[in-house]
Length: 270
Image (cartoon, rainbow, N blue to C red; front, side):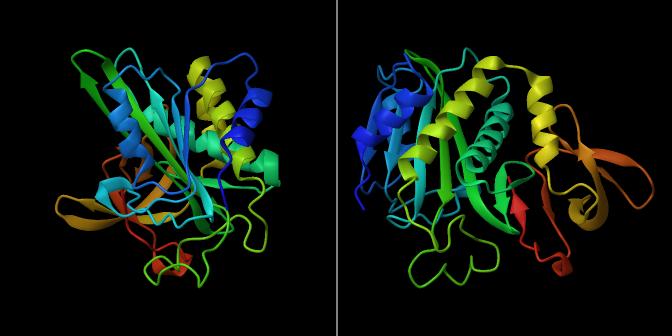
């Protein structure tokens, strides 16, 4: 199904009236983040949006492949030009909240966020986020913010390696709302990003956080240790309690997994 640039422009204009955005749309692209990285080193303005109907070489965290077959989801990357790259983690947290809010507004689906920035629906991951950045001598700091959302399950289902943890928002639905979802995600992200209200972002994020009260296994001192998730710190670190009663924050580079009996036993590394 063709991704309509005209419809996407109209949906964006409806939600963000008076705002100027540079937009590129493709039916198929190797990677929307790679395209934004190319644009970042030129004169492309902040909020340049690259959207695709599918990706042949989609990329997730830690260089993993991001499964993004044509005509099943939303694949988009946004160019940001922050003054400095002092808190890139806030950008991905903001994006996760924006995706969660947008999905709820359009589809009335109650979603949750798995620390740090994966969005889950009905116990399955339906959205992934990847932020990549750098500093160009001429253009300054830049961030390529990639967002993927599974709207439909692919024909034949997800690959075996993803079947246990990947899901779709509209397993029996139509793809008619693809441009609307892209525009709503953009609108919610811009609102939160420009507001820079860390207290509001923290409250909204915590309300959607799904790991509190769960036992997890973390890598500590070269071995695996059980820990209890207590909640989210103000800097969006994951606070856990260790078997000896001590507490510690986990940063975004931490590795953890849930016990198999929870049904969410895949390993996560950010």
